[in-house]
Image (cartoon, helix red, strand yellow):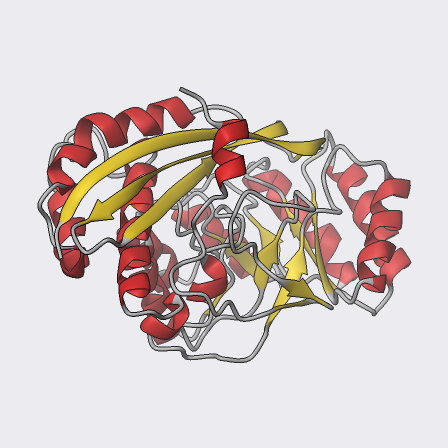
Length: 366
């Protein structure tokens, strides 16, 4: 099987309502990636996601650094292709950020081809460590721009839908305000749900220490991204000062960086994102590193859950799948299926990454 062509795309899709964390306010997401064709008549789709900006940069990486070097390659050599691209044209300017996100799209598309060629869903192609429905947690009711009343009301709605784990954002102007908001939600949900919080890198070490200390009373599942995502020593120091589990990985772009967090004892929950770490190939390496250290993997929903619903079934140390349901009718042909707080196993061949024709027609940017 040989690659005969590849074409990039950029979709800008409204999310329906304004949502915000401590870093940004979002009204659209950009889905940027490529479709790879083969001489076997099998095509694969891969993508990454940004929040309203940066998609054109990633598309330029695909068009100018990667696509030409894919032609004539055998998708069955997916790991060899990954190494060739990583140490190829992008290496001098890349190894993280836009180049890694573009490489994620390529790698996902190649694995999509392999799963389709085998006539299996990706999670079965990768070994299928878990065939049962996966427990999920919902972040979509906990945005930082929501009032306390809205936070509590939406949490109640999710509990009624069967969710048993929720995450909310922190990182307001004062730690005291964050504590009050978390306290209100904890009071509203009681012991009916596990509650997690996400600071999205807003805090410095002093704020993080104060925030962790004051939030401990609310029996939280974890404290996510409390500090700068490259600062391993600061996370390790915080972890030693708090009983709250530390979760991170959304903005960690390499296997080597994950290795440093894991081996230094700076993280409890590994949130590796397939759309940012370079694709499925390195994602599996990070999951194996975590497993060797007895750590759980709960991937960040940067792929809008489509690929991760496969990957959490391919490893033995997955725990919860993050979901952020942004649309009633999504842009994918095989949209993730959620039911009563669990993710139903996808059974169609591939990685669940194909977009509908309607999505390309309506949201494409030339």
